[in-house]
Length: 425
Ligand SMILES: [Zn+2]
Image 1 (tube, rainbow, N blue to C red):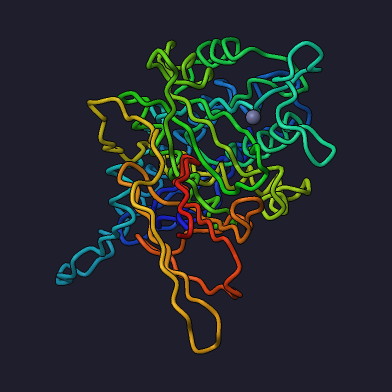
Image 2 (cartoon, rainbow, N blue to C red):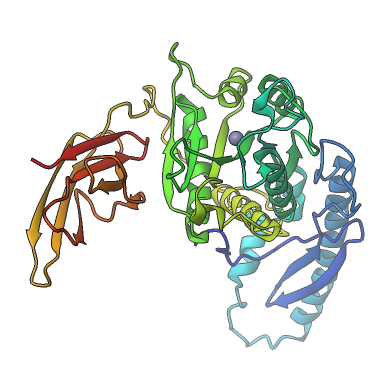
């Protein structure tokens, strides 16, 4: 629950469109706290191009100018007032002037003068897939539930962009805002053209056997691209877990030549832009689908993505901060390799219980990643139970009703979907 965490800070500068508004000026002791409102939301109501939610430089400058102006006026008024107060004060009064932590924070870190140089992140959202798919099925993405992934990713991206634009210190761009075909190279080039600090590619998953579920994030396996991608990815996964998904974690994948496997990550990295792929959940799995089946659910997903990203960068809603928290991510010196081997130590034991059922103790260890799911068969591997979530560390336990005629098979999976099977006998 990091997304809605709010730090109590003074000197919040809010702006309300072009019409800035002085909400209140509170004089505490000798200091004043200035609250000015700005709404960072695009109010045009219509989205006209690929660049949306982006606050224009002019609006930004005007708001900063207005904030500075107000600050000057307030400082002048305040000076005058404190002068008067001093004259009225009893010379014998030895009280310390009431120091306000809030006001000192304002002068140290949030002086509106600093806002001229306030950091502004450029985040590019990339709704996965898009286009008619007549010659390239990739354009459609996953196809389930009588819909296409390409439509749903666009809904999520729009919601994420809208939500993110309510935060300060960020500009949001979309690679596409219609059912448009774009190559991965074009998406990366667009990100470069707007000076992106980060690209977030939004997707929905599906699996061959239609049994997997959960959210996962793919990032580059290299250096700072990995560090930033993993930081943001973990923060988004926290939000998605809070929303109800199971987290499969942040992962890497390498192609045969040792570069990042996924094109969008590879193309962005070639242009110096960290990128991550958010796979929200599986369209072909019922429990995951229930968290994305309605337009409202998709909007909630987008808002969760935004909250995760904002939490990572320390952004605040409606607040332009003079500086953002410094993240000290460990930059990996070696390639962060994916796990390419299934869980290593897999065995089970069964124990007859007093209620006549058997207690199954299933053991699984994966040293390179982690154990994620298991399933079992009673008919020698012809059919399997639904994929169940691994509950403990090295061991998961569950009861089974057995007659003794079954042919048991247990399968243990890591979070890279690799499995090891163990059979009875
Ligand atoms: Zn996809």
